[in-house]
Amino acid sequence: MIINFELSLANRLYHKIPRLHFIEKIFELGYNLSMSILRIYTDGACSGNQNETNIGGWGSILEFGDNRKELHGGELNTTNNRMELTAVIEALKILKRDGLVIEIFTDSSYVASCFRDKWYMNWRKNGWMTSGKKPVENRELWEELISLVEKNKVEFFRVKGHVNLSSPNTNLAEHYKKFKQWNGDRFNMEDFIYITEKNNRADALANIGMDELR
Image (cartoon, rainbow, N blue to C red; front, side, top):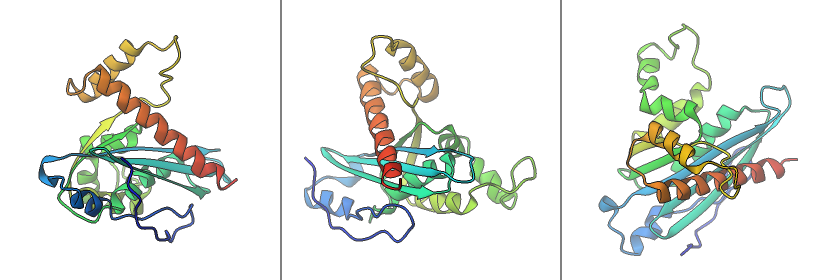
C-alpha cells in the first residue's frame, strides 16, 4: 500500500521533492514503532563526475511495512560522493520522529564505511582532519548526516550497484557471496535479490533527478 502524503517545497537547488509526515502516517495505521524497522535504499550518481561542469542526481526509497515512498533530486556541478550523501540525508530529513530503528542500504563504500568503521569519530576528534592531515571533504554534508543518524538507531549495509538481475550472464551466487562478505549471514538469497532490486530502483531515481536538470 502506498500512502499519499502532504507536500511542500524543498528549498535547495535540486529538484523540489515531497516532504512527508512519513512516520506519523504509519503510526496512524497502528504500527508498533519500537518493534518495526524502517528500511531506506539510496543511490547517488554524477554525469561528468570530477569535471568542472556536471549534473548529479540522487534517489531514495523508504519502506515501512507495506508502505513505500520514493524521493529523487538533482544538483548541478557536484560530485558522486556528494550525491550519495544527499540521498541518505534527504531520506532521513523527512522523518518526523526520532529513536527509530533504521536499516540503510547503499552501494557507496564511502558512506557505509564511514559509519561501520567509525571514521567520523576520528574526524571529530581531530578537528575534521583526515589521518593524512587534510580537511575532510564534504564536511557540511557529513555533519548534517551524522546529526540525523545519531537521532536514531541506524545500521548501514553495503550493496553492489548495477547488478543486472535479469541477465542470464549474472552470477547471482557470486554476488550473494560478496554481499555476505560485506554484511554477514543476516540476509538470505531472497532478501539479497529484493535489496538489489531496490538499489537498482534508487539508481533509476537518481538518473531521473539528473534528467530533470538537463
